[in-house]
Length: 227
Image (cartoon, rainbow, N blue to C red; front, side):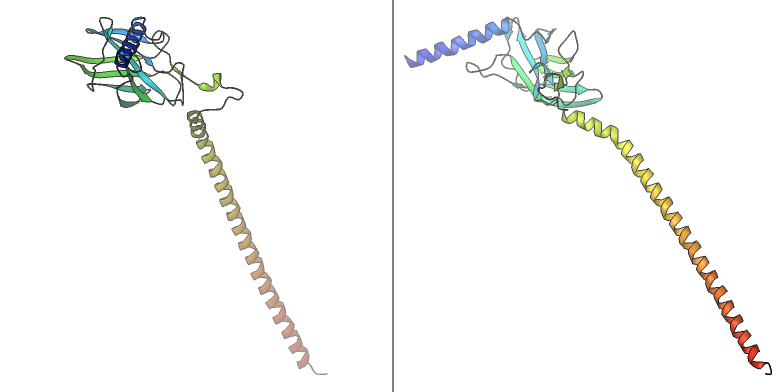
C-alpha cells in the first residue's frame, strides 16, 4: 500500500510539473524554436538584481514536452559589454521529486546592472546549437540595481562602490601629485633659505675678522708712538 501511495504521489508531482511547463515559462523569458526544440530563456530570479545570486534559466522542450536528458553537451557564455564567462548548464530538477522537468540552469552572480547576453553552443542529441539571447524590453529582463527596492536605506552594491573608487583614483593621484610638488617646492625654498643664511654667516665672519685685524693693527700702532 505504501509503495502504491508513493507512486501516486510521484505521478501527481510529475503531472503538475508537466502542466506547469505546458502553461508556459515565466513571462520575462524569450521563447524561440531552435530546430526541433524550443528554448525559453531568461534569468532564474526575476527581477534580476545586481550583486545577488542568479542563474541563466533555460526551459527546454520538444513538441510541448520537457526534455529531461540533455546531458553535458550544451554550454552557455554569459556576456556583459566586452566581458564574457563560460558556464556549465545543469538540471534544476529531479524526476518525480522536485523542480520542473526541462528546467536547466547556469549559476552566477551578475555584479553590474544592464544588458546581458546568453550564447548557447554545443548540441542536443544530433542537432547543433549556436543561439544568442539578449536581455531587453522585448526579450527578458535586464539586471537592475537593488537600490530601488531597498528599505529603509538604499545601500550601494559592491559593484557601485568599486565604480566610485575607480572614478576617484585619478582625483586622488592628482591631489597626491600636487602635495608632492608643493612639498618639493617648500624643500627647495628651505634649501635656498639655508644657503642664503650660510652665505650671510660667512660674510659676517669675514667682516668680523677684518674688524678684529683692524683693531689689533690700531693697538699695535698706538704702542709704537713715542709718549
